[in-house]
Length: 40
Image (cartoon, rainbow, N blue to C red; front, side):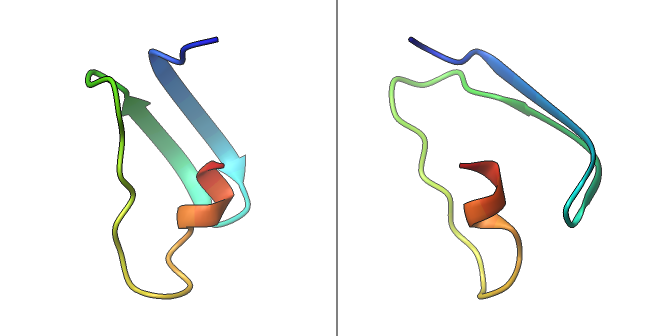
């Protein structure tokens, strides 16, 4: 299964978030406690 788009509304620390996965691989980078694991 391949995700093209992910939309989050009022999920954990995301109020409204739209993510487009355009590349074969996506890398999540950020400081601690910013919600990277919440996307998984």
